[in-house]
Structures are given as structure tokens and as C-alpha cells.
Length: 379
Image 1 (cartoon, rainbow, N blue to C red):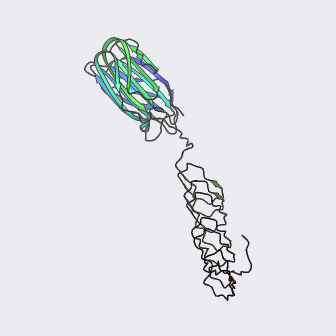
Image 2 (image 1 turned 180 degrees about the vertical axis):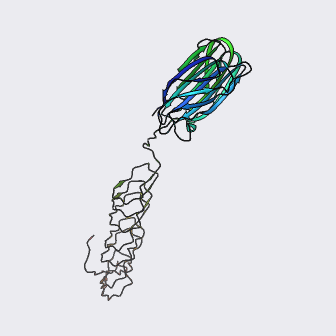
């Protein structure tokens, strides 16, 4: 929700030591800024502010005296119980030659802290003895896009004030020998300014007003952490996700690995799963449960060691395998010499052998084991 602003009170008076505004309506969780500009020979006092009704408490943001002129800004915010009421500005018995005030309401602001303290990020003051404009410098904003710039000015000529380009005037008053104005705009401004026609003494206060911003998280998140509650779901990993941490509670799911995943370690809880190996996976650690399966060795595999669990299987050796170690089961072998094989080492299991020798002169030697397993699994 973007910040918005509206003027609630813009009033002026001459020869007064205290001023009470007309009644106006306040709302919960909105920021109210009260600007008080006055003139008194020798320098005005800082006024005391009181609010009648509506639960509003005024706290000073900043003030500045320039010659006979003084400007002060107060803040207030009600979180609950807001209502209508007046505001009294009391100069403690000091009669001001001229006095002007402006009450402005801001919505969409940060409501943390007390009496609007969370909504005012920073403030600054500036003044001059004879000028037709004034600029107040602010530091870089905490949020240059969503926070708002605020300016309040007084100068010693009874004439209108021109706001800086891009600003909206909230009030613009002149009273006898004094002019006063309040302006604002959404987004950062590091030099809040205003101008007028005649050179005169001037003073101003600027502030950064903090917004409440709703953040939407889009594609490109580096990490996802699932809720630490029992869930049933299916996850599909997509290229570009850096990390995923699944819930550390019992769950049932199906996982599909995609090219370029380095490794997967399944949840260390009892589960039933099906794993499919895809090219480029570095390794897979299966659940430490008893399993029954068969394996088929392909060309280029250097070594295979079968699962150290009870199983029944048949192994076929294919050209290009460097070595194979079969399970140490009892077998009954038959040995047949073949002229094209140099040698094969049989399993170190208990066996009875029958040898048949081929007397062809070109044969070297061959020892071959035929494993008889029941039942035989056909890969």
C-alpha cells in the first residue's frame, strides 16, 4: 500500500499566546504531522501541544528558530480508539505576532514504535537570513521508491509559497508579514525545497516518512525450507534451485532427479521409494532396508559390488568388465575350455568341478564356472 496524504487543518491567527483548532477526525494507524510556524521579536518559544479527544499524543520531531521566526513539527499516531477532537497550541503566555498551523494525515505508513516514531526515518532543518528559496538536505532514503519526502517552510513575507516540482501542497498560508507552506511527494528527495517571490528570513524542516511495503517473493529464490509439519507431497526439482531442505518428519513422496543434480540423500525415516538413476548423477544412497533386486552390468563399468543382503540372482559377465566379485554362495560348476578366452577366475565358493579339455593345438587354457542358482533371475 503506497503512502497517501491529506490536509486536516490549516489555520492562522494574529496576536495570540494560545490557539485551539477546529475539531477534526483522526483514524487508527495513521500518522499525523502538526507544523507550527510563528513570529515573535527575539524568537518564539517552543509551544506545548495538547489534543482533546481521540487519544492523540503529540511528540516533537524537530524545530528551528531563524531570526524572529520559528518552525516546529510534531508527530502523533493512535493505534486504537481514535476519534474526533481539537488540538491546542500554547506558547506559555508569550503572545505571537503571527501564528499558523497545519495538521496533515498520512496513511500507508509504518506503525511500529510509539506515537508515530517508526514512521519518521530521519529529519533535518535549514534556514536563511535573506533568500527567495530554501533547500533542506536529507540523507539517502531507507527505501527510495516507497518512502515519502515531507517539507514544512516559513518565511518573512506575506505571500504564497511555490512547492518544489513534483511535490503536492498540503497547505499554503500567509498572515500579515509571514508566509507558511507544507508539501510532500512519494519517493526519495535529498534536497527538499520551496520558493517565494521576495527575499526574506526563512526556516524549514524536512523528513523521510517510512512506508509499509508488502513483499512478494518471486522466481529466483536460492533456498526453500518446507514447513516443519507432517505433510504428504511430491516435489519436482527444477534447474537453478540452489538448495532444498525437506521437512524432517515422516512423509510419503516421490522424487524425480534431473540432470546436473550432484547427490540426493533420502530422509532417514522408513519409506518406500523408487529411484531412477539418470546420467550425470554423482551418487545415490538408498534406504538402509532389506531389498531384493538384480543388477545387469554394462560395458565400461569398472567394479560392481552387490548389496550385502540375502538375494538370489544370476550375473552375466560382459566383455569390457575389469572384475566381478559374486556373492559367496554354494554353487555347482562345470568347466569347459574355450579357445578364445585366456582365463576366468571362478567364485571362491564350495564347488565340485568337471573338466573337459579340448586338444586343439591353438587353444591355451580356460577355466569357466557355471553358477547354478535357484531360482534364476533373468535380467
